[in-house]
Amino acid sequence: MTRLGETLRAYQQRDPAARSRLEILLLYPGVHATLYHRLAHFLHCHGLKFLARWVSQWSRFWTGIEIHPGARIGRRLVIDHGMGIVIGETAEIGDDCLLYHGVTLGGTGKDQGKRHPTLGNNVMVAAGAKVLGPFTVGDDSRIAAGAVVLTAVPPGSTAVGVPARVVRIAGEKVDYADQVDQIHVTDPVQKELQILGSRLELLEKMLDKQIRSEQK
Image (cartoon, one colour):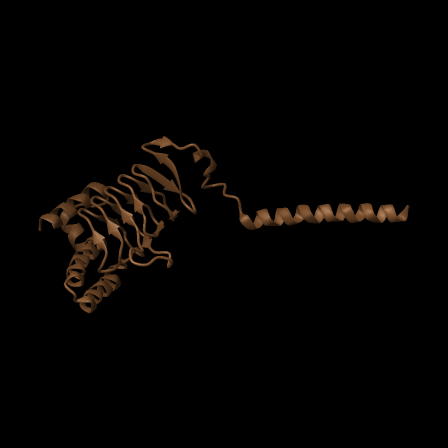
């Protein structure tokens, strides 16, 4: 009950729309998913793998949040909205983390054993972000909405983009931060078309020059 109470308080602190702990307990799918996961994880650790998966699949159906029974989750996790969240089997989440809807803590399919990320304490992963692979996102880090994180993130960092790059560490901009523009992103198809257009123009000039020399 102590853990449930501190989880409800964490939701109150982080969600300005939360009006009461009773409302959070009864109506917040993130709370329900966490409670189901505790049961599923207990069963998983005691060798009842099939029953553990049954509980996790029921939770997925009920909440829209998929957490593998093998995942390890710390205290006071807040899942805001939550729909579409996927947390893999070997993922680990520290204390006081915040996950928004559409987040994936997944693998790349290339690793064996430890395949999913580890989030430190007080990590925020914004809506739609994908953290993929067996690396660590350090304490107090922030992952921007829609980012795709494929490498380790140092503590106290902010990572943005696809693939994600660290643009701040401990509140200070890193050297290449100005190169990361999330609004005016170059379209790779358009870039290729421009290159092809330049080559075609060069070939036309060469052909025109050849024709003129033959006419002389």
